[in-house]
Amino acid sequence: MVLLVHHSISPQSRKIRLIMAEKKMLYVLKEEEPWNISTEMQNINPSGELPVLVFDGTVISGNNAITEYLEESNPQYKLLPENPLERAEVRRLEEWFDLKFYNEVYKYIVTEKIIKRFHLKQAPNSKILKAGLNNLKFHMEYIDYLADRNNYLAGKELSLADLTAAAHLSIIDYLGDIPWNDYKNAKIWYAKIKSRPSFKEILKDTIRGIRPSGNYTNLDF
Image (cartoon, rainbow, N blue to C red):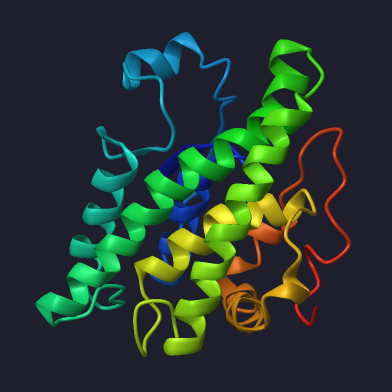
């Protein structure tokens, strides 16, 4: 049995779920709250970070480590191009979303709207939220540019870049903070990714106490 320890508001966890679904892998989910990691999970992964992959007595932790393992061990469904330059571009965009988008958008919006509410029992800081939403505009403009230039974000074929970006965006979209109509190319691209079978389970995710935006599960939005 392959076990993925995750949480629905973890974009890195969503990314791994999308990769495993694209590679037709069967797995079981175990949810852990990122702000309340259990002792059992701390023993498995001392960093206390999600996601964690467990199978056959083996533990692989860390977004990048799991991603590389899944890509190398399931080569029949490739999400990295063969060409080294094209592969470098995919990895550049992976890093863009896993680091830059995460630090400039996710941490501002999700921390204020979700983590503060359920973990710290605090009201969101409007100034921090506004900063996150302003940062989101810059990132959406960049996604719009990439989607206009290519069939997918990094080129002609679906890649890890698309799954990484969509995993992060899906959480912000759940909260209703993306003005999709302002970014035509990005909207078309996201609708294409959201319509893939691998996204089906992601769209079933719910956040306790917060209803998804009206377009969250709508494939033709």
